[in-house]
Image (cartoon, rainbow, N blue to C red):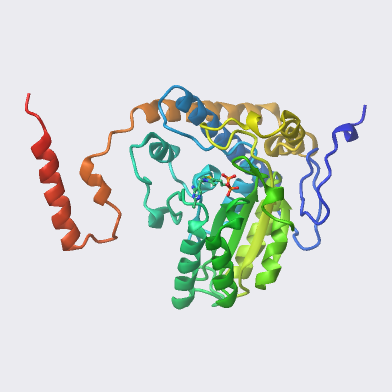
Length: 372
Ligand SMILES: Cc1ncc(C[n+]2csc(CCOP(=O)(O)OP(=O)(O)O)c2C)c(N)n1
């Protein structure tokens, strides 16, 4: 039996650098100089973020989280894009970018706090160069566009200094592409030639709404009407995501303006833990996408083409077990927030007027406490 039986070919025009069977492919516009050890590091990232996701779903089922938005199936898109960022670039996520958060060194427990209701975002966007999660669909594309305008005003574009030139990477979904906010950000980014990369994870579904009813053209073609390039990548291919995002971020930093990347992928799990996809999609669909799993192909490459030893995979599994333990015990131990913490992180330096309000609120709250 040959392995061609399970060959899954990319759509025409889609950039793919690692096939679902784990073979390297070349693309003339996106050469990727990467060592096997670097690919092994990407494998580690992919496995670890999948483990965070699996643990989070279990915690939600046990009543420890109110909700969780799973990234299953989208790890390749997110790790490739996340690892293409330079430290001083700024990224704007939606609520599903746990893989990018991982690349920005955000502790998974901080993300879990948002879904447990113990924090309102949890981390400083400026410490990680990673904005807080945004639930309002598409709003973060305008935030990112405003940030990119600031980058231009600071003169941090096209100077040729790699430590100064800055790009902005913003994530959104296929459903979000129909939002006015996203289209307004396309207009402003094109008009201002802003250093921004729009990274659309087309996971085929906006809750129960299929992408086919959202758009009559492939999403990556939307950008041409706004006057900037669009590229479709195999969103389950971490190498394609890395190479194409890297190039788009380089262009942005070099004052070449925006790019739209459509990562063609699939949401393997329900929209969130509150959703039941059996009500609106066929099981056969996800069975087909399983053949394009973003982790299996990297493992196949490392095993067959790079001759990696089984001990490497065992070590990554062991690391995932340790991380799982950290997530499980850490989530249960997350401290309850104090009422006045809603005032934290609103301003970099709290104005006196807000400080006065916070103190009055704290006094009010303590007046409600019943003495034993
Ligand atoms: C402005 C706004 N409208 C509606 C919602 C409700 N809502 C939450 S997720 C979602 C679908 C988003 O789909 P998509 O952009 O494809 O992203 P995905 O969740 O698939 O990653 C909707 C409509 C919302 N959060 N914000």
